[in-house]
Image (tube, rainbow, N blue to C red; front, side, top):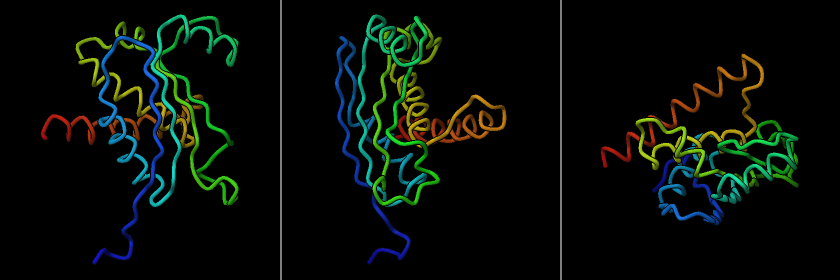
Length: 160
C-alpha cells in the first residue's frame, strides 16, 4: 500500500527529431519525470520537444525573440507561471521546447552529446516551470536547480 504522499505524474511527451542525431526518447522522458515528480508532484504535463538544426532555430529565435542568431534552447509555455497559479483552467505545464542539435555539438566541450542534451533539456524544463535567469537572484535559484537535476539524472544514468 502506497504512503499518503505518494503521487505519480502523467506526462504526455511528444518528440519530433528533425535531425540525424539519434536520440533516446525514453531517457528524455525519464528526465522529465524526475524533474516534474519533485517540482510538481501529481500534476499532469504536456511536453513537446523539437530537435532541429541552426536554420530552424535561428528562424524561431528571430520570430519569437527578435534575435537573428542561433541559441541552444527555446521554451514556450502557454501561461505565465505554473508555480503560482491556482487556476484550474491551467492545472499543469504545457510547453514546447526547441533544441538546436548543431549548437549542442559546438558547445558540449568534453561532455558527450547525450549529457549535453540532458543538461539543455533540463534547462528548458525549468523554464517551462517558470524559472528564469534574467535577474541575479532568479539565476542563482535556477542554476542550483539545474545542478541538482543534472547530478541526479546524469549520475543515475552513469551508475545504472
